[in-house]
View 1: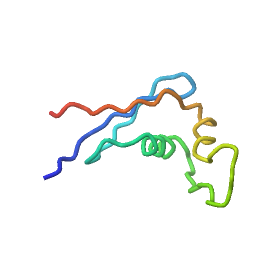
View 2: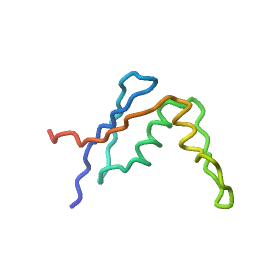
View 3: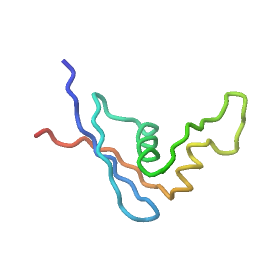
Length: 81
């Protein structure tokens, strides 16, 4: 049976350390970590992804992360208790 695990997402926001805890059956990838950070820090989250026919100079998700000042994202599994 698959076990639900806890993962800690560490990152900097405007140079200040921050972290989130996420429960998941598999280790989240960087895209999932970025989404969790955006959901945690954006007051009015809106779904904003680029349409397949658009060719933006920078993807919307990347722009939002830059606006927030997020950098140095690291994901680690928390030890079982």
